[in-house]
Length: 322
Image (cartoon, rainbow, N blue to C red):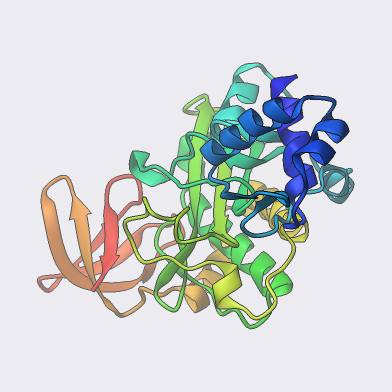
């Protein structure tokens, strides 16, 4: 009940206009004092609420909330939808569903993650209603060894969705899982697995995209970032973007299940921001400088280091453009 009331309050404030405490209290069936306490809780979700005597409360900027009914219609016949206004992690939710034996595919999305995470255990900043947080649970055959290049194919799928919903954005891909615009990070892909090493594997493909994030909300981000509001003159609605990303990921997984990464390799190469550029490979033995020379059909990256051609894999190393 508490969470439902908080969401009802957010929906009332989402238009960015002032609403009096009396109006909000009447709409939610609670006292003005209770409204004030709930307003304080919204700040824990990364929302900035202004309070002005005689006018009431408003969000510092309007929110473009997701429309679960529209998303359910968008995925009907392709995947089930799980929409949670607030959660710890959509990838975590997907892995939990896999553990419960829920049949896939399932698309999970949310307005806010309290424990969003990126690759190699890094935190992923997930303020309420500011970005896109979406995961797809999908079953693949062939065991873990058949999944090489999946994060690259997922990046291609997200780039396709962005090209349709935000034409002219010119997003590129940085091996193995980052989406960049003008050298700044727009989003990323996180692949997690559950199942048998050599049999059926439940794959979770998680995507985070920055849509409209304030500097205050992005305080904890320790790298150059950009969002769609900055990168394009008319950023897409979050519901349309979630629908497009989810559908492209499902279509990609259907194709990947049959043919692996090979059908996506040429398109990845056109989006590859590392190709023939100086890079630094960070691995268990330290950092080594080299030049990236493209990817193989298993998703491995070719790097020339000290005159020697080497192949590195995403689970073993991280990469920095120099």
